[in-house]
Image (tube, rainbow, N blue to C red; front, side, top):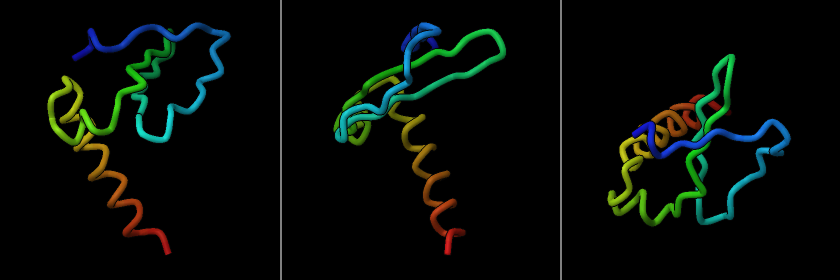
Length: 69
């Protein structure tokens, strides 16, 4: 799974992906890594190596939405 991520350059603005895609980030003290943009259709279909990460992210997002008035 980690091989899907690449280092983000220090001068990269970390822009948003297109509306039909997502980016995943790993942020540490020494580096920022990004996977994406990944088409949401591939995550939904489950044919991308990070599809399970996308599923788990949706669970977290749903829990946050449930707690937000």
